[in-house]
Image 1 (spheres, rainbow, N blue to C red):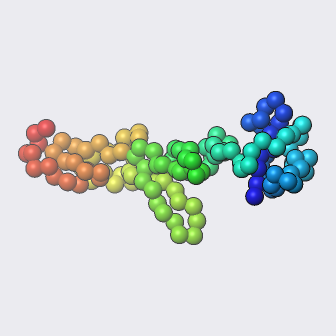
Image 2 (image 1 turned 90 degrees about the horizontal axis):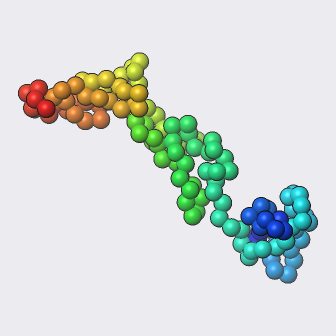
Length: 131
């Protein structure tokens, strides 16, 4: 098993180490300072705070009890990759707009021309150019 060796007086600062209640030596950890055994298991870690770049640049990091998840920002869609990390891609870009009847705004979201709807502004709403 593992546990938490925390700094005396500031137990939230420390490190996870291998061991159990009978054989724990916090001195063997790589963490400097006076350490004391605090937990039977390691406390939850906020990976999002520890590594601000853990997610793709167009994703927000959400801390979860089991770890973290990356959620694409507005205007971006998740691309799942079998042999590598998933990433977020723009739903539209100003230079190569996928907006069929509209324009790509600064949030990479299609703003549809009057009479069209859908993610790529490709659905005619049949409103005869009325809003």
